[in-house]
Image 1 (cartoon, rainbow, N blue to C red):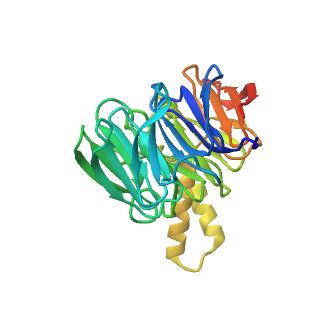
Image 2 (cartoon, rainbow, N blue to C red):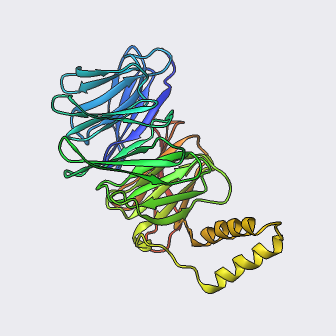
Image 3 (cartoon, rainbow, N blue to C red):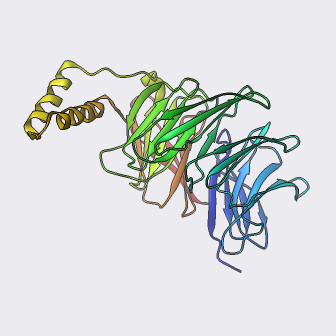
Length: 352
């Protein structure tokens, strides 16, 4: 028998479960308390496993060196019947799938398709800049659908707002100067978080208006951001990266508002800028503007350090942090909601 290889990891809409696609099928786990719920073995790999809350319908896509299904098809799997009940076919490889109770969203390299869940009729098609990571996020509350994806230009985010079957509104946000590496909406679609390929800054926006709300600082060194996640109640934002530290920001403490600099911070910025003695005033202005943003940005409230490979994270209702890794490790850590600081690891397991 082939060694089990992880091809996909993801949480469901409210982070109550997480999924694992492997070269021999897929597995479903309860997030907290940790429980190996069930697994399905196939004669091929599963590269994407998207749950619909805790119901019996999943969206799966083939993956790995010997995919179970073509990588350009989304298969709707009914686990009660243990068979596929529908499929969507495309010309290109599927990069990601998002499920709502009323919609199926399929992400390709340069295009996103939105379907009505009931009859799989096409609602909308969106053109994007090259999107090899399949970046796309949707809201999950029962009312309007907010969808955030890459725009047509580098650093731009497009937000579409839908009612049941029609698009009501669409606008673009210039989120970063460099390419976007991560984008996520909260459960209700009232908050949008983005990061660029520099990996130092996370920006928060109002997705309904495009208004910039807050800038968060992961660190000063360049990093590859693996994931951004906002808990169901929008109290916490978690960020995982190749630096091995999970950064946690307290959204409730921030109030999601701009932080004004104190006068002494402005003086420090000016003194530092003068000390560099740049050759032209334009350079001084840009330098000071960049540095003032550095002082405006909010540093993380809590951290959790691990040494695993690629990771994603989520929060439980009890304000615990859960981290899962591409190495097959599950971590549960206690978050001190009053004082922050280092999270204490309280459980570690291998799920593969």
